[in-house]
Length: 250
Image (cartoon, rainbow, N blue to C red; front, side, top):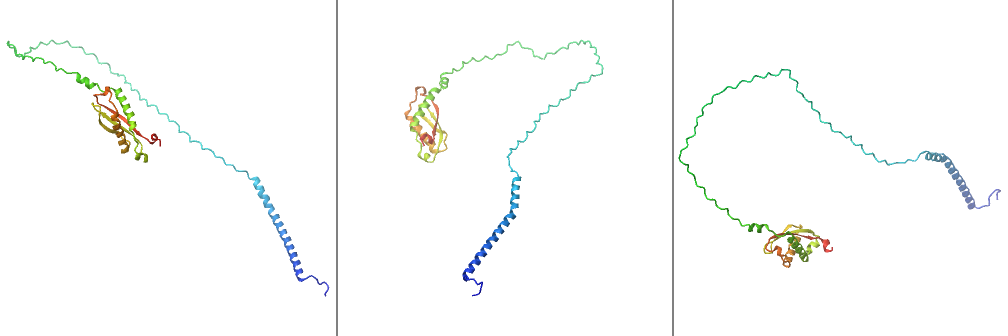
């Protein structure tokens, strides 16, 4: 065997070389990292100083001031017209003329052209005898002036509305379609106490509601009795009929 020859196996020599290379590589990496930190350290210091120097910015919202009101313009006074005074006349006043004495004038004879009246008496037409004025009977005027008592008409109207409510029916088709409205009826009674006409003064916009309002009045009419104060007299009533779903509990 030659002196200095290592007794280690070839595999053992290669493992030691690898470990030494890794150690050298780690040392080089550490040195490079430290050098990089040293180079970047001034930059970090400068950035910290800039942050400390820069002040914090704050924003405030300011409400804009309203525009100034325009100056009030006072109306100018009406112009004064100059007063024109008449200039004094320099001419002397005219002298008064002397009055002339009146001249006497002789009266002129007037010729009368009137015919002479005859001595015969004039013919007179006899006046016709005065006829008595026709006699006017005051009973028809009193009968025409005496109309139905307003208080009795008002009480009869309330009775009719009270009885008509019992026969009020809200049409099913109107409830399903949410139809509502107010119907104003005009009812005319004759001297016999019967309905002479029943019409719609103002409708609800739906024919089915107008027809139902008239039907309830016809159903309630047989249940009413004409009071003695309205018997033999004609009068007119106006009755409103309302159809609203809230009244039906919906």
